Amino acid sequence: MVDRRGRRRKFLIALGAGALLPCTSFAQQGKVWRVGFLAARSRSTAANPDLYYDAFVQEMRERGYMEGKNLVIEWRFADSDYERLPSLAAELVRLKVHVLVTHGTAATRALHRATSTIPIVSTSVADPVAGGFAASLARPGGNVTGTSAISIDATAKQFELLTTMLPKLARVAVLLNLGNPAGPSELKMVQDAAQRTGIKVVTIDARTPEGIERGFAAMLQARAEAVVVVNDAIFLGQWRKIGELSVRNRLPSMAPYREIAEILKGAKPGDLPFEQPTRFELVINRKTAKALGLSIPAELLLRADKLID
Image (cartoon, rainbow, N blue to C red):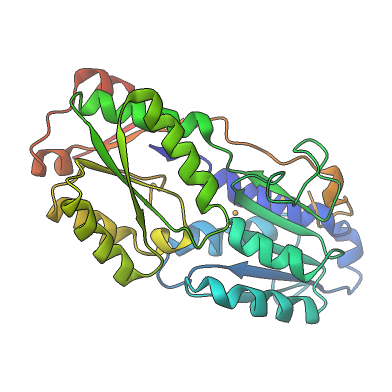
């Protein structure tokens, strides 16, 4: 199951960045606006770099902000090393950018700790309120806004879909990064959903590409029958490896990947509500299912938004 927010996230991030800067009529008078973009993962290893980077630039361009004319984007990438985020965040703050843009809880926390004055637009923050970024979703009140990834219902739906596909499922591995600030809360959501379905959870903490490989070996040792991949920048950058390991180890998998604007115009981030996901997309890979020896129930085939053969 994957979130159908790819294009919408880019729109909201660009719209959010655009709302926090003055309107383009001011920019046309010679003002150059600087946006700091902090990414936890590597640009080169993302499943689809255009989804988050090139498309973001395009969305900004459509709102009147063009690189080389009235816009400078300072790109910083942590290459999936979360320990680099604080220094990269501090570097962007020192550059005195007008708006900071990022994705995920870890990078948002690094920026939030680095500045309380520069507006921050973020996507996929696990829980902005619990994370201390917002007083409430409707009225954040601080310098952070964007889209929230609170996904209790989605997590429960993942287990519902898994049990529909595998009625006898008794033990599922959960691949997550507990080094991510959102990791513990994500794990609790998974455990709560599993408890309601009577499924035993095997927790696999992976923080590096090598850790992912070791994690799959641990899944086999724990006799896991399927794997749920929790959203994390490291896993998004390693989506191909995770897919290959799932097939090689004959573990059906479910991941939140199908493979980031009202701020540049003078709005205050504390007045802009966090958006939450409202639509999700179910994508089923029939070729992979066949390789794993699985028969996909007709119920799931009818519910799927997309089938991959």
